[in-house]
Length: 113
Image (tube, rainbow, N blue to C red; front, side, top):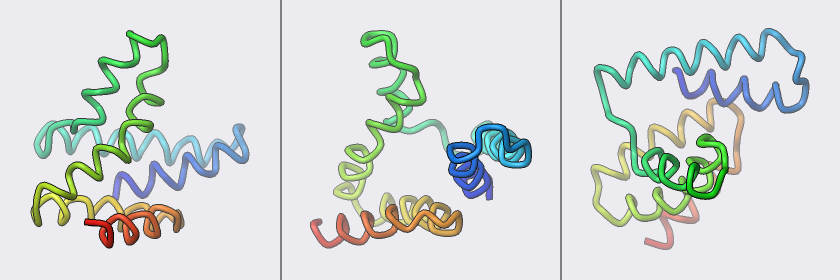
């Protein structure tokens, strides 16, 4: 899916910034995610928090959204099964992209709730 493409691409771009195939995967992933957000779920709390903190602290929006995400995921996990199901989709996308730490964090967080 879109998130898997984006995560794979970002991980590769971090290692090799000139990797055009990885950059293309990022662009395709974000394009697909943006298209889905027009007809599906709206932006989440970490995105909204990023819009507030970014200008306030002069930090790029993407960074503030990422920093806020773990806390938002923990809060969402306490809100019930529907939220956990949605978070499971995100964890599976990161897992499919080969980012095992997210799956490990999700398992540990689920055990804490």
